[in-house]
Image (cartoon, rainbow, N blue to C red; front, side, top):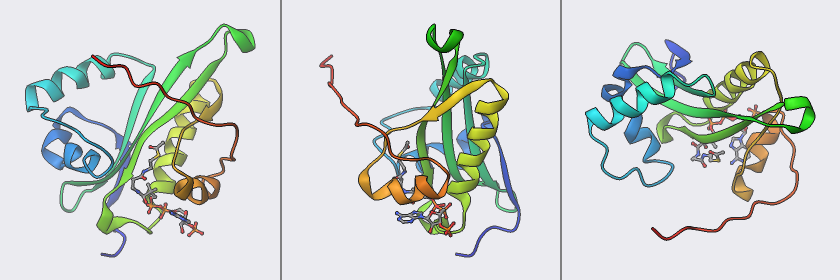
Length: 151
Ligand SMILES: CC(=O)SCCNC(=O)CCNC(=O)[C@H](O)C(C)(C)COP(=O)(O)OP(=O)(O)OC[C@H]1O[C@@H](n2cnc3c(N)ncnc32)[C@H](O)[C@@H]1OP(=O)(O)O
């Protein structure tokens, strides 16, 4: 697949349920069962929250999403009540990888984080994705730790 000529990078819209948003996320991790009403409810929660911005890349000639990445803004007391942008859930459709879409999505999140007054953006990733994020201008720092919580 070549790079889509009609590519639009924009904010997630409520009708993106029908444009393959969840199928895209399923290429990243387990999505589980999410019906249209559940998607719509969550979309309204996030859309009303200025600390969430989900970017998508759409091939407008096919009304099909080819990539997504999320920015969550953390409001802190330190750094003079500063804000930190957390980048999460970055994925490009397998058939569309290698055409700079991932880079464009990260650039869009960095633009929004800067506009919202964040003093840095951070993320956790696998070792094999380090070169990609370095190409996007990020650099390696510290380690990730996790504790899974049984429900
Ligand atoms: C915070 C998180 O969500 S981490 C999870 C990241 N997501 C995944 O692992 C899901 C599966 N992988 C993917 O969806 C994609 O491979 C992504 C998102 C990692 C990269 O998206 P792509 O659109 O293929 O990357 P893109 O084409 O924008 O690459 C930008 C640059 O990084 C380089 N690059 C991309 N992936 C890699 C890699 N694995 N190793 C080395 N270089 C890489 C590209 O060659 C390109 O370099 P160039 O500017 O010199 O040409």
